[in-house]
Image 1 (tube, rainbow, N blue to C red):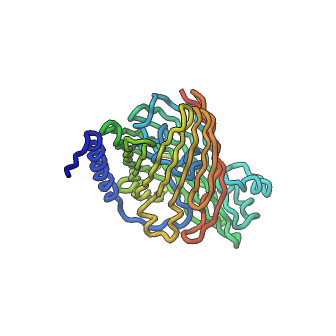
Image 2 (cartoon, rainbow, N blue to C red):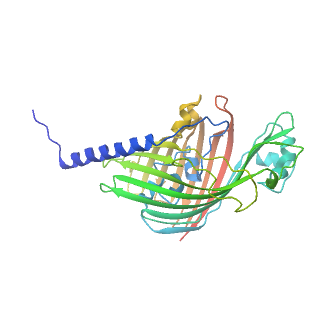
Length: 373
């Protein structure tokens, strides 16, 4: 019996074959890794993704594609920009820490140390992000301004484990569509100016940023791939190679402060994801996605769940969004109300802030407001 493929089937076969080759090349680009000591950190993750269990790369379809997956620029339907989009994130113990000993600087280690010294072993977390941008189909440019502070005074009351980052980053992204948009291949170039503290600081010593931080600038790139099958629910396979070749903060120094030390390099790694997009009616649809982050780092980790993410989103009329998921081992939820020019997003999620093989959950709240034009 003879079998022959239709033209559509042949196109799908060719598409899968080409995408498979691209995916293999991207995986081969991955270098060597070591296991992270504490929280698994990403360069960027926004309120939508955090509400959906931290899963993002297969569903990114707005300005956040610049940082999450540049192939997502191929999903944009309009040209728009964001002028004002503050995003604030805190741990749910913030009020208790503040009541214990009020402090005025959310991102200044010397301001919060007294409260943490009265709450030994309690971890403080705060993050603030601005991401003004301009995006169109297959192109985007954005500026990320972000401050992060994680801190905890140990049980002896002598050392404060401190992670601080002050980032200014310029992102420029492009996307190429192939085979009628079934394959999207994108790239984002990054210039990052970073001030960082990542060490234990003596509680009795100087805790100001100028005395303890490293500083430097880096040039890096991410490459993203989306493969979408032209069938019902549009199943999509995504992969992103982050920090191709490694992003090292040796491209410049002294831009914002003077120090001989440089921030930690961002190592090359790969994220992969799968998503489906069922349509329920003219006004409602859903997204289901599963994602596995940092394949190289995860390969040497004891607890693989620290790199696993599951997410769901229900969209009614592009106005009301309900989201939930699993970030690592912890549940997440959130919602969004959107209009033509504004977005309001809330996410509540759990993050593993323990070490590999010794999990510790911290609950966090994220709020974001966006004004678009």
